[in-house]
Image (cartoon, rainbow, N blue to C red):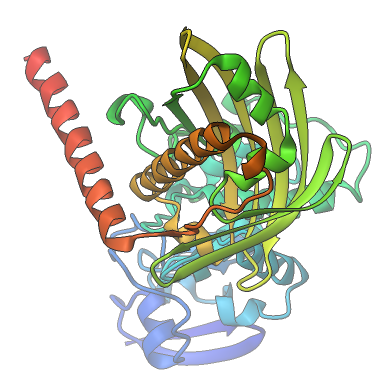
Length: 393
């Protein structure tokens, strides 16, 4: 046995441990500090990250005996730490956690980033997070939460020096290994042509096209009338309008999941090109989720009686509803909403002025048919990838 003296979370601890006892095991088994999680126990997953001597360390690789005399901080000892308080709030607001297994160590690494690299950009944040694996979030919410705290701190420290280039920064990465800066979503090539996902700036982009069996000028007249176009969107309601700015509500129910967003938006139209865009932001009062996004659209004539609508939707979603923002689900929901919207536009144009201000009857999506749509979409995507792989060979 080896005698060890450690300062753990501000308290001096003395113990006799076997030379092979890891620091993680000592903290969990002897001191009952179970916020330090054990995953791979090979220094890969980073779930056991704690602070030793002011630096993040993988405690599964450190022997307790080798840390004699060290100052150790676990997640429990950072409960009232000012930076940690900010990070916990940001992680909650940006939905930076799901199962929570990696969260204590992720917070410790995030604290180190904020304190050591006050001007880190997204690429550097991802590089620093390379030693902490998360199987749930795709890192988007985590990066966003860390940047939120960094930006808040930067606002109070004007005139600070610029961040070094990535090649120079990489030399002082401490316990982490590089995390490739890649989109957490599948690439556009893995999706059917009608709906493509990407991650520009952390948001999700979906492209969708559909046909309306009416002349382009007729369709444009409806698109230029905010109240008429709103009445064609399932679950949407126009609350206030002042020029090109308006306030609205949209409610979509998918089985037991209900989203009821209220927010503000701005509409811009270009009659010369038959195009426009609407950008907005809103919140769901029921669960605190927040969304912001933009939809750009262009109308083109297929022939004298039909119009093609090309729409690009870019959005970001935070809060509890973000866990349902998987590519297959989002694609299926958008496609179904677009189908309902196209039908409503045709009905409105067929009925003329008599239909102005009417509300669509359906504001819910059938969970069973939607699940079938998602399954079919994923099968098509899998088959497409298999076909490309076979052709390469």
